[in-house]
Image (cartoon, rainbow over all chains, first blue to last red; front, side):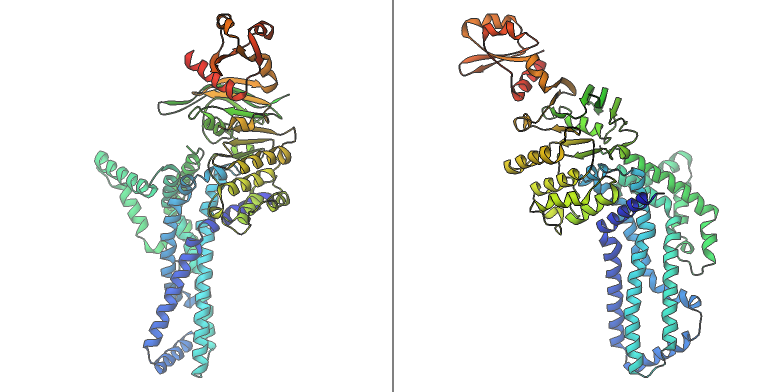
Length: 284
Length: 286
């Protein structure tokens, strides 16, 4: 890939972030703000001496432990962000190609020397790779604020802060795991992502209704004609497996990606995404 | 002169509506071509087909490429301004320049900024905050900063006041057109572009009803303000259109030698607007 092609793709990703800044940055910032507000409220309800005692206990607990061993503890704090990311991903994928046509800006985007494949690929990369970066950075900012608060509390109560330092390292390690979890989960959910993109490119109105309606119709027809519920069961089994959404150990990454179910899903997702590229070829 | 656009038997239908019904079209390189037609005639569909924005049947070549196969490559040589405000409303002016600079290999940022500096468009405003005239100016600034062979304009001045419209075409001629580039303009405001055009195409009901160089029009079409006593003589020469004018009758003839018409009355070359009406009425009445 030449230098211009890379810069061009960077330009496409930048466009996605600017257009969907509320989903990429605004939503996780709101979640972080709410968590900080809730934590502050809880702290005001607890007696200061009890709070200091709790901090002393945590500091001792984390002192000298490997950050990666303790990272899963912090991943639980990341769950609201991961859920927000999934909700925002659905909103993004179902609207992104539809919105261009709705506001007629597709004529501008299509008047540039950018292929539909590049455009759709940039949207996948934006939500799978770029969006989690912003989420992780915002969680990191939240941890920094919490660290400053804990440090002030520790100093004012004469608590040894070495353990707090280890705790912060564990929090950072959890961010790496959260980021990897988000990408691996996206690969697992690629068929759903492709399905949403396909209807975002296809529907003239209410793309979410189309995506949901056609899915229900296909499931109903399968049941009616063949008497089976293979499609519904397949989707339900993929959606309801929590192991696919959070990775607690680095050793698990390889087996989560390179297994039959995930790879089959990637192939199905790729076919649906190719369908979205085809649908976007023409504006009418 | 080679042709930048060559189209043969283009067909496109939307359900039962035939938008293009066997369009044959050639546009010479370096021309300023006007695509004129009433509402629903197929102008926008034709322009969309030329820029790869809709699928059509038939043979089509634009700047040596088939737009249906390699639209994004074609767009390195072709720019398009549509009849609706199509710049994304959520972008700031500076951001849209950043975007075009990132994705278009032939975009000259300095040129665009120089053009914009002569306007009232602020770089930090979002497009949705600009007036329609400003959005058009911004789009023109972007297009003029791109080194392309062909510029396609679909009703570019629709909804603009006379000052913006005049400025738009002045800029187009002075800052964009260099004699080698080709411009295709579709518009209803025929009088405004008549003097710019070197090539003319009329389209009606998805069919081309006229495709001619402007310089050839005086040799083909003649308007005669016929003397009252020569009406029967004029009728015999099968005019394509007759209209009342100041108590007299004005006849439009196609491919009738001027020497033959001189005896009927005062001769003119019809304006594009008059020719347009004549050709469309001819179509209507067969």
